[in-house]
Image (cartoon, rainbow, N blue to C red; front, top):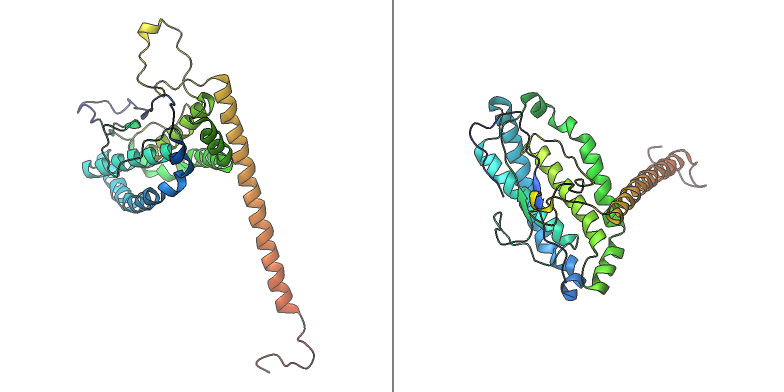
Length: 274
């Protein structure tokens, strides 16, 4: 969802994109069982939309360099794309069982993204890809960790018929960080992705603290924070394992090539070209 900012909004005011999700409720075990199968059409659509988003963001990058903000057509498309991808991610990661509609605008869907494209720092736009590297690594580790142990999460939701609150908190934190990373990378916000571990518990009177949804504000319990740390550690271990495996595989391939290149020809055979 794209909420257009006031025309006179100051450039220094950074709007941190918001994610609204409902409290975890009972889910249909059949849709949980077949979740990945049901996601195949969505994965195809997201891939196609991401290809278009790449070209739109390139055009938008040049426009933002010149004007200090995304062109309207680019902001509209990219905001819709981020919202769409976020709804698919939330569904894939078992936070709810409402199938994402094939539309950018989904006012009746339980997962809503709040974006306010506005003024951008031209220098930050110019170096956007470099600046986004740390956040890209963090969100990559988070997603790698969650999906590495996703079978356990899937089994828990399948057995219980709902996602336990701590698992929901940690998963929602990952979904939100991914959304904020995408919004920053695509120049939909000047705010760098932050608050991975959620907001601090409100200390004021209950009636003075606005609560929009289960994730706004996103307050993680001790168990939720612990699970998020576990996902981070698993993601780091998975990334390191993949890197080491790739290195050893590459070394083995080079050794095989070396053996084939230096081994003497078999007796009675004449090498080609002689």
